[in-house]
Image (cartoon, rainbow, N blue to C red):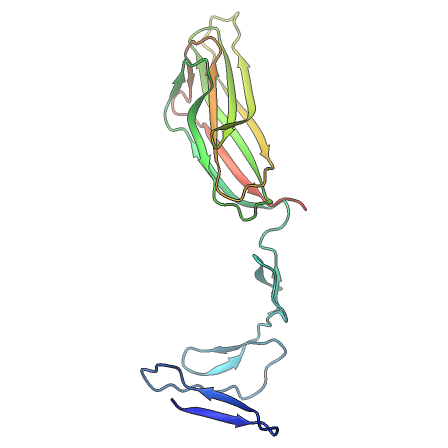
Length: 220
């Protein structure tokens, strides 16, 4: 292996060596002038080296930060997301008509499995909408949100007008905030029950029932 030794006046050396393996001759052409402070050396892909107009930060950033430009070639490390910003959004939907006669809370199948969070200090906001609800008789309906199979919060209660003989159709929506410090993926699922055991219909006509989960960068 060939090497080039540059000796300092004090006797210490700077040594340049060839790569461990080299399949063909390589030529690198040095820049004809110095660059500005913090300017990196780049290649044009054909061996011509030059100092880039982009200026790198003078020191490393913190874990998870990314490089950002000011539009004038100056790069700096910044946080990937600002406080209150939506980090990601995931959606679960019903695509068929659903029914239940259960008087105990049961899973509806309307659910979202989140991604692993960008930070365990972020929050989740869950938007829920169940469309085209109908009854087969006088009834009350309860909707809850469960997290990893455990009750989190009730988000909807509705009592059908028992004085009306007309089949009623309506939609129900709710918003839930979850500020737990989750370090990994979680599953949110909508549960429901029928107070009387009479049949409850939902998403009749395959309407727009959905769960939207957004990860939000927490305010510090």
